Length: 451
Image (cartoon, rainbow, N blue to C red; front, side, top):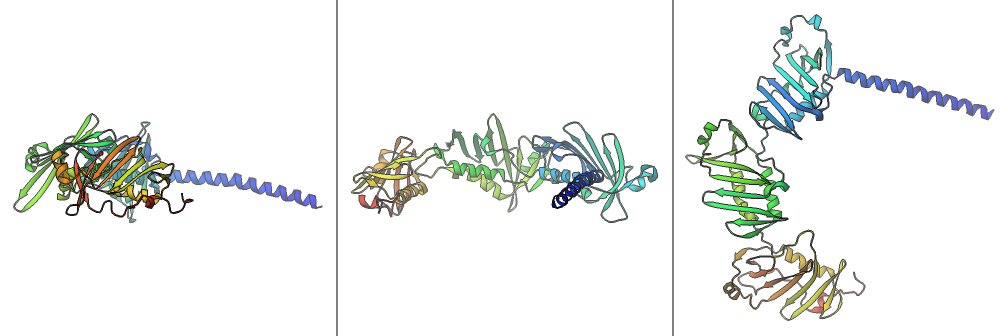
């Protein structure tokens, strides 16, 4: 009896599961078909590579270049990709509030569809065409009459009004306000001409070198931050697309020119300075684009600070290099420290495990020491600064190469440093090496078992 009951329950379970699977699947499929039928335009946003738009604000043609959108008409200019993506996203989700029968509509002009105020045309990568014409608002708030063309199929409907508002953008709203579109890693050089001042910086492998107005190293982190800052610059207002008007904005004899080398290509920015009484305005134009736009004073001041990327560090180690040995000498103190895996050992004058925290403190002080003044590396200056008889001397072995650093006695709150990592002599704050161990035993680990 029990076996028979279990068999009946099993059959009922199988039947229920079959019912759910069959009818549930049908309902899901029906729901998807209904959703698809309600959608005005069935397309994938990522596949669209051409957009034509006619509205009260003008006629525009956009083309997708890789991942970015470009305005093709009425001017050639990078598009505000976020604005284009927002419009396409809205178009892809529009649903029909009601489907209309063309034969019953009669005169299309009474719906605003004979000469629609807004026309959107799309083309995707396969060549498929889509068109949406927007007419007058309906009597019901928030809705508008529409003509829809997908391939050869034409239909009429009442749809949401939101897309009409998105389409009503002016040329300046469709433009990208970004001054530059380069990627930081593409940049191989930067040249700034400002009044009588010339600054030139070139990439040298993973490092950067200042070529003009002096030969010096540039800090790669500061240089990356500067280039990232250029990427964030924005135009505040678009002024003209007519090259004949450049003289009105002092662009034929610019106040400032910035050339950015991108491999075999150079992108140039010209900035004109216009003074009207006590008011000063700056206008810019990128040589690859015809448009003149206004930039704030802060943009010009930021570009003018290019020379601030000069390397101020006394120790310069790349991410692929590591310090494997340290010879530290300060007054009567002389110690030799050797890396031992993740730990350190003192090999002279007292052998033993080193307090790793003290080594880390030394390396951190050296890493954070920044120049506050620069001086020529001449014999005369070495003698005058006291570097011929230094107060401290450190040799860092980096990737098998010994690098010497000499520190003078403090003078007026400064210590002069001659570093094998630099071509000049610099001064740093006098407290750079304060707080380090004063006796050989002080470097050793307080416990023999400490790692």
